[in-house]
Amino acid sequence: MNTLDARGYSCPEPVIMTKKALEKGLPLTVMVDGVTPLNNITRFAQNKGYKVESRAVGEDYELTISK
Amino acid sequence: MDFFPPIVDDPYTFGKIAAANSLSDVYAMGGTPKTAMNLICFPSCLNLGIMEEILRGGYEKVMEAGAIIAGGHTIEDDVPKYGLCVTGFAHPQKVLANSSAREGDILVLTKPIGTGILSTAAMADMLDKPNFELMTSTMGRLNRYACEAMLPFEPSSCTDVTGFGLMGHACEMAKGSGMTIELFASSVPIIPKALELAREGIIPGGAYNNMGYIRDDVEMASDVPLEVSDCLYDPQTSGGLLIAVPEDKAEKLCRRLKDGGDEGQIIGYVKKFDGKSIRVSL
Image 1: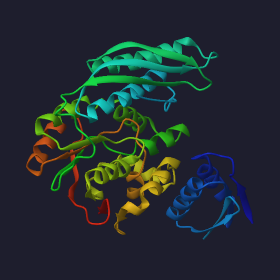
Image 2 (image 1 turned 90 degrees about the vertical axis):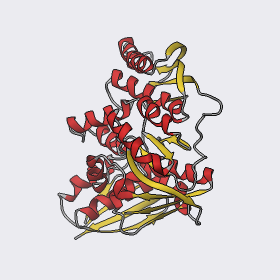
Image 3 (image 1 turned 60 degrees about the horizontal axis):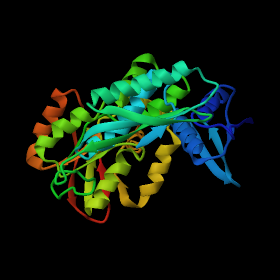
């Protein structure tokens, strides 16, 4: 599984990192540390036609992006 | 009074935007700025020529406002910051509040929204030159002309759209006035590039904070596209005026605003409070 840890980066960096990571294949799991990157990556991936699932992991969030 | 760190790299442009933003509060109250004091934070490691450029931008906007710079204060700080402390005059009986909109008033907006999203993209070098210039000219435009255009139409209430976004400031007006504001999302002028960037998830954290602050006060129709809704919450720097004006004067006011080079768009109206402070329909 393709994974990306975007914790510690501020927007729009996590979205840009996700865009690049998606080129390496699906599904992609992304870890982020706030609701802003969570919402922004969700909007980006859904607009590209991908399915996005997310869950809270402690104080962070894990997104799974798939076809 | 307002000041903030650079939102664009060019110090002269930053100075203009920060000054236009600081002067805006006086215009939102229907006043005329008279004196302004420079507030500047500056790191010792940076070239003083940069400070000169910031101050030159600010000075030009203060001159354009017809006010004078009456001194100021500088301190050393790691991150540069600039803004003005502005004093203005308004007739005591004619000072405009943001809490005095009346039932039946029409709401007019004088600048397009979306500059917060554009700034976020610009920080990541994701913004093309024409949109960058549109962003800086929108933020750098003084609300003086919009203020002068509105005063003869005896507006009942006015606010400027800044950090809380159009929704936040409209909500403040609605709550303060004890009314409900109906907004037509498709009538709100939004910079097209901001819609495109919102779809790509280039949205500042402030927009999500703004949504959270007023979640319970807002009803957003389900057919309003998400990117439009996102832009309605986008925090603005030096945004336009949101003017509540009697219905029979709204069209004329919009024409006057457009003649003066502003946006001048009817975006909604004020009605009796019906349980929500803002209702947004497409």
